[in-house]
Length: 311
Ligand code: APR
Image (cartoon, rainbow, N blue to C red; front, side, top):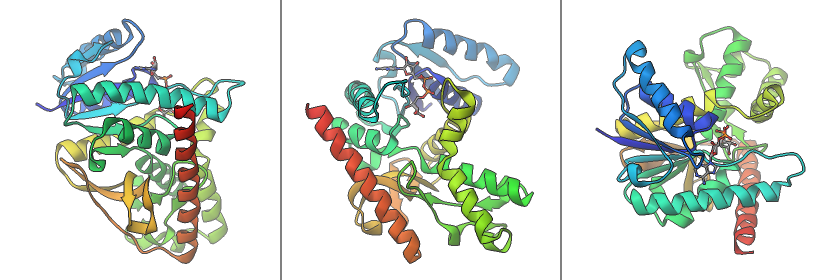
């Protein structure tokens, strides 16, 4: 039975555990620093088993002993930006949390595939890679599946068709600079441009870029977690079942798309070994320029992390 650890029993972490439990993806261990919280949520989920029809073992813990030799570890621990907190403060706090968590995980589950969810995503994936010393194929950031899902949801609402028939890939960093690839955005195999005029499509792309902020504005006290946890579960399933799905995620890109060794959103084949291959899509000049801009933003963020962590 595969073993999955989810660090952070907050909104994203606990919902991820619930989805993994319902899919019977393996034994699941949920870790949080808050005493009793992961134990309570784990027990509550186990008690849902008889009703929902799953036999997954869910364990809550405040330490790492129970997580030993996990096959996949999902890192969701971190804090959201609070009033008066600068972006650098958030970056530094979350980098510190991701660093300490990754150190523990690398010791207890040295063969795991790491999926990083904490924000700012691309920079936190960089930290996890650096600290773990894991080969790059075993460190992956979750952003592209979520960004693409948001884009697909908005397109399906606009056209009035099933989300299942809308396919799209969003590249680049998780943030304002993400790059939806319009040429590869299709509705039952037909180009999306046959369904939606250019200006509407641009508005939907912008809504996708602002997708996280739109939810924060509505929730007021937290950020999105239903779509993020669904995105993580899809990645975990592809890895553990060795499905080799092509999913956009933050992977170390050294060469493809002209990216010089940075974690950035690209379509990747996810299998038992983690990122097994990066797929290089043909991009328009505008998309190439957009991706370069995104890469530059991620690079700057990683340099800031290095400086903040050295300070
Ligand atoms: N070890 C374990 N858990 C920790 C640690 C740590 N060092 N530090 C914080 N946590 C836990 C908190 O106790 C909390 O329960 O992480 C959890 C975070 O949960 P929420 O505050 O509900 O945040 P959530 O909405 O789940 O988002 C988590 O994912 O999408 C990103 O931007 C989001 O960075 C954020 C992360």
